[in-house]
Length: 140
Image 1 (cartoon, rainbow, N blue to C red):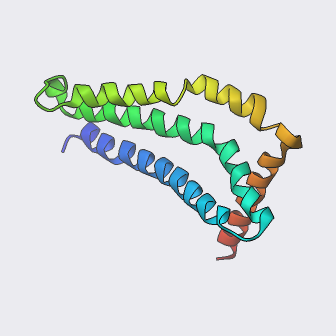
Image 2: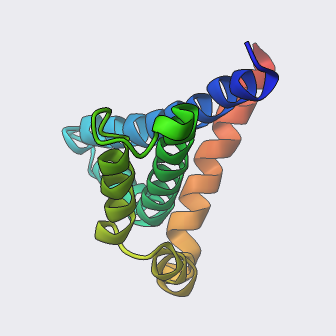
């Protein structure tokens, strides 16, 4: 196999899967917490979702588009032939970026509104969760 083809096949799908899974796991954990009887536990995912939604949208749409373009590249000269449909996949992936909002606007929303909201409560909750995760992993 050509080295550049090997690099392409190994790098891009792994990045997309890991970023999409992180977003999905975060959302699933939030759904579980929302069903909790504890009021504080029910509020935590709302804080996390508000903070991380622009990040998840940006990462998933950007890496999704990059991987679709890379898949098209793998077809070589056949990437634009309608029989394979790759050109439509690329258009669809690009439109997903637009539907989710320009990533620059998502970044402005994150930095301008969400990081400092309520005295940085959401950011502190997120960093606390990351700290607890790191402590658990170090203890292993």
